[in-house]
Length: 250
Ligand SMILES: Nc1ncnc2c1ncn2[C@@H]1O[C@H](COP(=O)(O)OP(=O)(O)O)[C@@H](O)[C@H]1O
Ligand SMILES: [Mg+2]
Image (cartoon, rainbow, N blue to C red; front, side, top):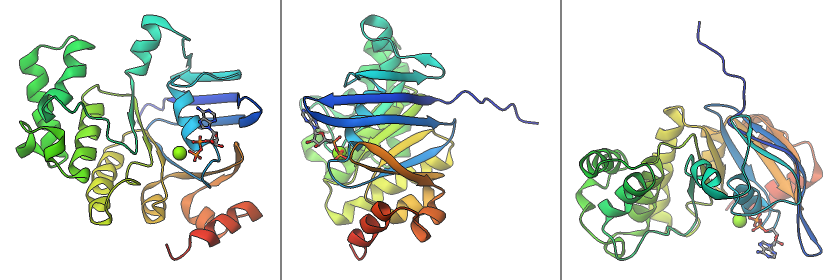
């Protein structure tokens, strides 16, 4: 029998956050299990990005706790940097280093943070670039690649750090429509490979097909959550029903 590890990879307990008067996260409680693919959806401004950013402390919180594999996130210093490196993050904007080649973009973290030998880092980078389908582009600069290719490089760069989980914040929102699927396909493969993933997305087909659970946020709260078919076919709250109706046909 397989060993069952019940400690969530990521856990938020009673997380609250304000931006001035704006109560942007309200008592967020969430556990993400190993290998789970969690999709977060909700209207613009509901706090999805802020929640993602609190998970690796790109944002501080007012109260509550964020735990990674059961351990509280340190608030600063080398320990925080080490833990941050364990969570991959892919944003809407690709954020590749413009003056470094694709290969250098992927090997930098492993060499500088993980102290991996250059040859080893390059071999691993080439493996990952092949996995996301851009190995032939290794010696080019980011600007020479399409948006879809750059986003796949950004995913490879995160994977090169051997993260415990990957977070995606609207990774396809800035892409031309014909490039969306090539990025989603990489994410589908990752999910199938057992990666623990938090994905903020408006791609409802992806959410339904790939996620284990959908979390619906509105006004800084988790309003509803459930298995994808249950959530999409039978949303329980009016907020979720209205949201799903508003995006139908898009
Ligand atoms: N750095 C910030 N300072 C002040 N308000 C912010 C900041 N970042 C986000 N907000 C506000 O917090 C709310 C939630 O934003 P965000 O987490 O980006 O929502 P979402 O990702 O769901 O669209 C919005 O009203 C947004 O304007
Ligand atoms: Mg956002």
